[in-house]
Every structure is written in structure tokens, then in C-alpha cells.
Length: 297
Image (cartoon, rainbow, N blue to C red):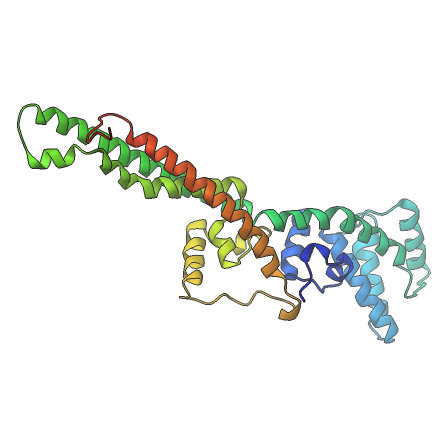
């Protein structure tokens, strides 16, 4: 059976065996300015494996790790205690190479990621599936639909007032058709889409992406298109007009993206019901605005 993604041990994720695409977690931890911790952890694992195999690269890996993560002011300097850093620098100076030399530092960065970064990552992928760029795009698109709905309602009411005033002077079948509040219903699809997409922007949880099983919460901004293009692509996927690109970096048997998608889909259904209910109530209110022809009662 497939394990629940929030029960999957972080140790496996840190070692590169995640139950979700590795890029999903990697992108998140880099956005948290903590990518050097993950890189250090994994490179130390590579160093240990090479040491066990007595590989000639062991010394160069040892030097690279020291100069990249341990030496003060280095490009990927990790946050460890002064005593620990000094001890490692002494090992570097004496070229004291052993498989356990980085153990304490590795445990330190592991504890930081496991207790802080990983839980927040799980919370993120459980509750959203859009990054900030896509949420901003959704906000713009939602406002556009809402503007169209207001324009249609305003035009319909204006035309009805005109038709009503003209009918006082002359009879006309065309004017009678124009003097009908139900023309305002043309705005309902745009009102529904506007409220729905604006809610998506607020919650960063796209209903369409949830049903398609896609997840862009931790995707880098430069890796995703505009929200409108994304939705077109996801709808094609749902309709079976296109196939999802293979995004897994691990064996499919270990994939639990379906579990993540199910959680998001359940939340999306609840949001969908609220959006539809609110849109219907608002549309009824718009229909009750004057002019009141034809009369309901």
C-alpha cells in the first residue's frame, strides 16, 4: 500500500528518496534560503560512499565540502556552532580524513530541516498548489471576469431603463424583449468565474489543478507559464486531449502525489460549493434590482 506523504520519514527525503518529485521539496527549501543545508547533507553522503569504496575522489570531495560549506565566508556556509566549525577546520588542516568527520555537522543540519523546514513544506503542499506568481496571475484574471460581469449587468440595466421609457410612448415587440431583467443572467458565467478565480488567487488552491492532479506550489516562477495558459493546459489534460508530462524523479511505485492531490481535491470541492452558492445568491440579488420586469410576484 502507498504510504501517507506526511508519514514519510524525512531521512529518506534528505537522502534523495522522496515520495514526491524531489524538485518539489528542493525548490521549497531553496526558496527558504536553506538550500546549502540540503546540499551539504547529500554531499556528505556521497563522500561517505566514496570513502567506503576507497575511491580516489574521496580527498577531493573532502576538500570541496570543507571549502564550500565549512570555511567561514564560503559560498554555501552552513550554520553550525563555532566549536564544531573549529574542529572541522582542524581536521582540514591536518587532512584527518575519516568517514565520520562530518557526522556531527550532518546531524545538526538534518535536525534543522526535519524539525522546521520539512513540516512547513508538508503544510504547504497539503493546502496549496499554486506559487505566488500563478496566484497573482489568477488574481488579475479573476478581476477581468468580474469587470466583464459588472459591465454586462450595467449594460443590461441601462438598456432595460431605455426600453421601459420608450414603451411609455410606443408599442414595440423588440422593446418588450429588451425590457427583461433576465438578460442580466448573461453575466452569471463571468460572475461565477470571477469569484471562483479570485478565491483561487486568495487561497492559492486551484480547483482545476487539483482535479488534474497538478502541483505548482513550490515550482520556481520561471518554470511556469501565465495562469491563463496553465489553466488551458490543465483543462486539456482533464479532457484527455493531452497527456501529463512525466515529472517524477523516483520510481512510480513510491509516488504519492495522488495522495497530495486527493487532499487538495477535497478542499477544492468545499471551496467550489461555497463559490457556487455565493455566486447564485449574488446573481439573485442582481435580478431583484430595478427595473423589475417581468415581475416575479
